[in-house]
Length: 145
Image 1: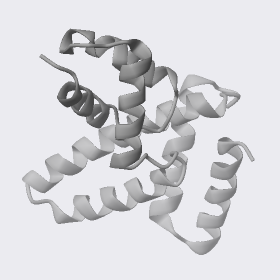
Image 2 (image 1 turned 30 degrees about the vertical axis):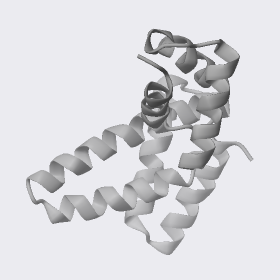
Image 3 (image 1 turned 180 degrees about the horizontal axis):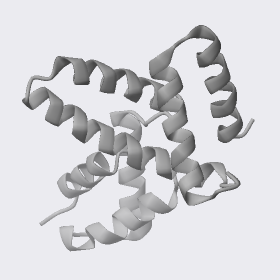
């Protein structure tokens, strides 16, 4: 089932269950898709990119809400993040990420930190649900100065 179909059925179910936060979050996700393609014919990888961007924006908003001590907003944003995570691929663990980084270093032939771009390019072409910041940090640690 395509992601847009999952969202549409989720909206209907949330309306039936009177789950306002879920309904509103799913509607927002749908609007993100429709803003890019009015017919909602985006392939799932494109939809996931949109959702990752939106997820990052919500995480930033959550941090800001925490700093100004707005607990009502914090709770809502946390609930929204949980709902959005249902549509995102599972992020790889630290050990899995480290294996991929080490393999990318070997495959790219990187020797020093100057070759970090080659390593990151190799990692990103794998199209995995990898935490790019963690991968970059690991690659920096593993490469010589």
